[in-house]
Length: 315
Image (cartoon, rainbow, N blue to C red):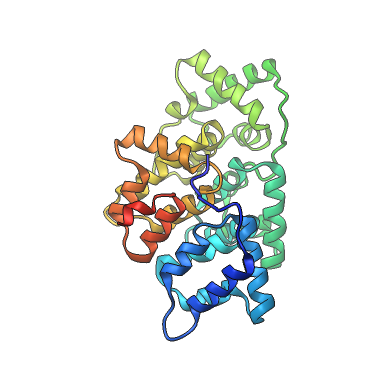
């Protein structure tokens, strides 16, 4: 369930006019910006952008980029983009930084449908004039390159072959037992099987070997390939639980990971962030909104809490 509280009826023209007032003059009116775009869904935000450009002959997103700064600017910018374009931007940032953030790519390929992923790849090509696969190949190598491409070509279907699930659970177990974790069979199974088929395989693995596959894939922070495979399996197995865990990790560090916090809240606020919040609370005995309220500040805090539907914590 989403946390975003968007009104059913709104005027894109009136919102565009209010946004214009908020960004004119010597300083911007951040409270108005938060109150408007923090309460508008993707369709409504697109209509506001269109109305703003038609009236003022200016791109609202670019204007907001120039007026705002820091984590607040990043969050607003990413929120204002169409979802496919936003994911293309997040993917590009993950791929082209000095150390590729495989988590973002694996999340993208393992939590989206093939149709959604195709839209992201088209947006990526349009924005960067290269395919996502090209940039992944150029910025990764070896086993990590294979792992980063997990799910990019996944089949989307609901059919399940029980015999195949049994045999592939056995293949995965043997590879783990023999510590041949970069075996091509692991990549082939995790990369190409449908999510429904993989769920059947993972369930069979647990039934046959007494624990989940991720428990047997012992984490090693120094092994990015293994971490990417674990991330893929966790995203396929229970994406909401996965997001709750990385939010906890981001918030529990001595210096919080604002990029991770922003990415999850901005990309899940219109999807399942309420469910993620519930899982977060069960694991941490504190709600996500209270953790955000405690560990963030200023306009960035106000914006995230608005997306979480918890503006009352600002009082």
